[in-house]
Length: 491
Image (spheres, rainbow, N blue to C red):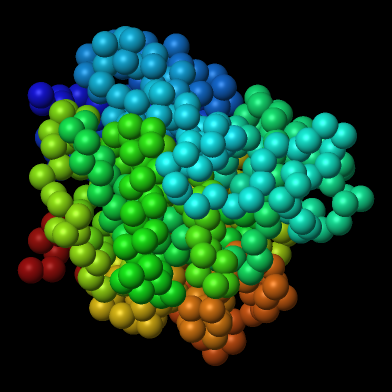
């Protein structure tokens, strides 16, 4: 089967990434947009674009009917959801399939099975995958018998750090449960919560999976995602500096078992929490493409999006686990329009100047260009900056250089926060866990870069931004000078 035209049911940098993948695969791309995104980069890049209407996600990127109509009206034969929005909606996946289109992702039943965290826990236990002690809160609000404080209250239907509360003492449990329920109901339409042992200090390790319809399931190594703020990732890397070959084989086998337990097909990610003794426990499975997939692509040489397209077209993987090897080290930094000094509050606006780095060994997946708006209705991710080197230390130095070279004017960003983070001595030593940023909050957020290292590139960009006016005035002056005339006065 050959895929001809794909609806990209997303926006921002991931839509641009998918459009680029379509070009490489010889597939036509169809973008969708809201009112707020009518002039966005992904709309300009796509072969075609369909205006969905509205600016709120519910009126555009979350509107199943409008997305299906967009695919049908443009003659698409497949739909790729990217990440976020409808990417983990079993309802949307089923609607795409029912419309006679190809869903570039896992089957709806696998999405539903892993989307319900309580059901996923039960399936993982049955499959022999390690799961942290926990379960549903018993009548009367007490913990399960095998749990002691501290515990983590989690949304059963959630993700992305939403609906999570850490509880240290029994008297705080009831309020935390009710707060988590309210947030989960608002964010996911599902107010169910459960509790698990809170593992601290813990490291967040995830394993990339690829699976075809013939039953071949491979893992592509692990990613270290412990640098988080408010349970959301900031820096990701592959491989983890704290997992050896034997540990990689064990956690990779567990991830494959998790995927096999739900008959998984396509790309997906199994997430684990690792304690200080090296024991790992299943957290969840993301049944979609991950934000941080580029670091795995760089160290394995496997294009995960192209693999998704081939699997959706019915092709086998044509790889064995022994064919997968990790070479070198890659780190990814998420550049957001947000203010770290204001508790990472989003900072929408217009990027008057955006100049990404152009260094060797650096990849930039961006969703904007100079002059583009960053709407307040959506996630404020501007770009992902990925650096590769043969060693972790070299990759850190390269990422720092890339961030330093990155220029963005017009909106506040977390660029300098990211630089402080990766330059911290504990990060350089690989001594990080999920509480690292909060413990070092003053140094990372209130810190300042030495004025001697202030980016000259920023000053140059400010001058460049004013250069159009200056050049226009200079042209007027030249036009008045006889020495600039081209009418033969000066031969």
